[in-house]
Image (cartoon, rainbow, N blue to C red; front, side):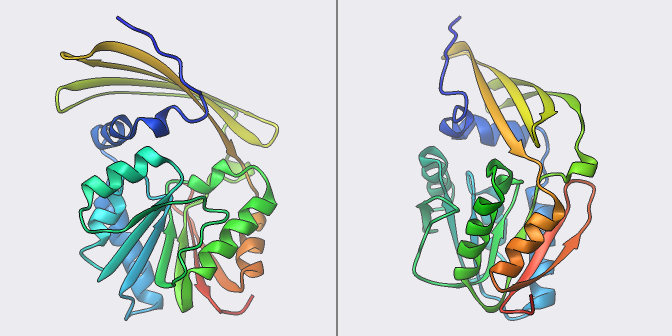
Length: 247
């Protein structure tokens, strides 16, 4: 048995296969989410043919969305996520970049940012910078779909979650504890990973997920020149914006 200690802020994003296996094993329904994204985009831009997924992770949403859009691309900050997404989606361009500053030099009919990835940005100014980048990559009249994190009125003070999955011969236990303080959820996540070939290892991940007010997101959409509506859901819900619409 071995125990490894990696940079806790980036540990899971350096382990893309483990990240993918955990959410696949937990039954995250990427296909249904992709269908919802497609419907939201088509309602606002029926002829949409291109889509960019920002913070695309291992490309699981993109894999489903590629059947609905002629051209799809992805962007992610983590080098290992970009590597795995490119391997999972041969022929699909996947770029390494920071959502606050990336520039691909082209626009898309739809731009999405899912899985509350934007909650890793602690300051409202960073949220505005990100929306400016999303809008800069969206065609006029194109659609932006953004999944936020929970708003303050829905923020739980303390929470524990767990999962045990076995995927392709590898067993992974994930246990997390989150605490709400200073306007953010501070989440400690412990992973124990076991496989016949590699034995057992343990590593710790730490997430700080900013709990922004709804108005922070709406202001960022407006500053980027987009109209926006909020669609509540069983999770954090979704913001859907249209580029070039009224502020």
